[in-house]
Amino acid sequence: MNVEALKAAIRADAEIFAEKIARQTITAFAEELKGLVTPGGPAKSDACKIEGCPKPVVAKGFCASHYQKARNKAKAREAKKLEAANGEPAAVPA
Ligand SMILES: [Zn+2]
Image 1 (tube, helix red, strand yellow):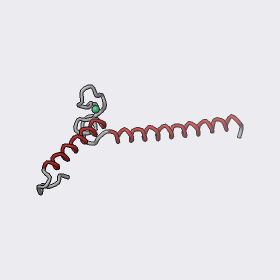
Image 2 (tube, rainbow, N blue to C red; image 1 turned 90 degrees about the vertical axis):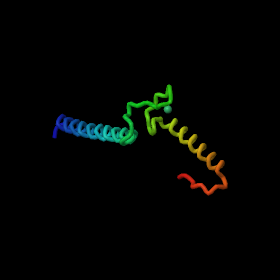
Image 3 (cartoon, rainbow, N blue to C red; image 1 turned 90 degrees about the horizontal axis):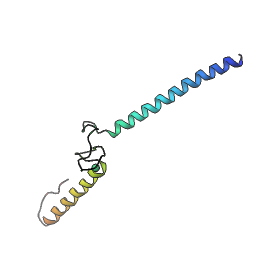
Image 4 (cartoon, helix red, strand yellow; image 1 turned 120 degrees about the vertical axis):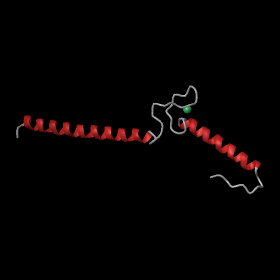
């Protein structure tokens, strides 16, 4: 085998290898993006309903950080309600 033929063979192999890696990278990236979009949720073009927040919606119209804040507020409200109803045999909400 002469050197030129060997070089050509190596180049061809390298090209196939590079294409394989590129495809894997693109596929992995696409999978990652899919995971970021809530299935059946709002379109990813929707922005958080908090004014001035440009982050994409994750749940109930909020972005991840504002949804977390809203959840914490709701939890605090629920805790206060339970406190107020303390002593009564009220069912504890899940
Ligand atoms: Zn937000």
